[in-house]
Length: 173
Image 1 (tube, rainbow, N blue to C red):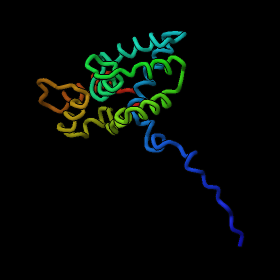
Image 2 (cartoon, rainbow, N blue to C red):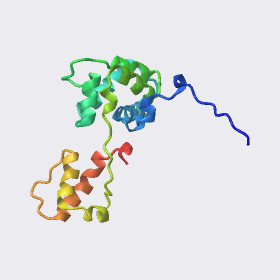
Image 3 (cartoon, rainbow, N blue to C red):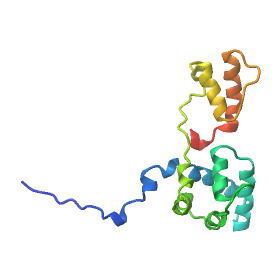
């Protein structure tokens, strides 16, 4: 009988727990990736000042968990601390957003505790018709929307289909 030796990886070379436990589901990665994509498509060269300006502009319209992320980064008006430079300099130098978020989470653990919620809704009309009205209301409430004067299910379904392009990001799909 032949015994094979298994080479164990030393703990120093293990991947970070953030990578093992869902860095890709981290809201920071999705938000900064969308910001980076919009910056690189609109501008040829990036500077930290440009990134800070666009981050402040993006954070001025965010709400919910992305608004909370902006608060943690210091990009919102009511933020107590400002760590925008630790985002703008690496982003302007084209550092991968996963690495930026990993560095940010080393300084503030709350940043990567914000995660995208699992969205398992089938937003086709057939999928929405299978949901109850209470579940349709929850979909609208999660987007910060409300259906005023909706009495029947088809009114909720049509409003959700109308508002879906505004609230669904590619990271949510």
